[in-house]
Image (cartoon, rainbow, N blue to C red):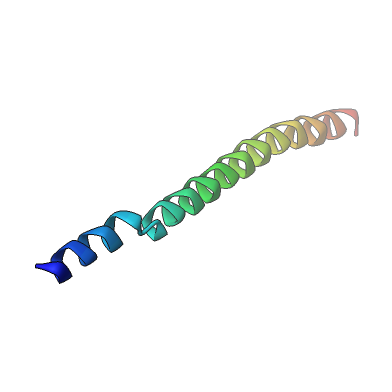
Length: 56
């Protein structure tokens, strides 16, 4: 009976799953920032090349 209580306490105090979720959220946030910035840069770069082609 004592080992069940000890294992239950150990399970409740374990925070490794929480840490993994936090790292996953950080990685997802970084990926979203990268995708948005690449999209914006690509749109602006396309406009620059179009302007250069029109002037040539």
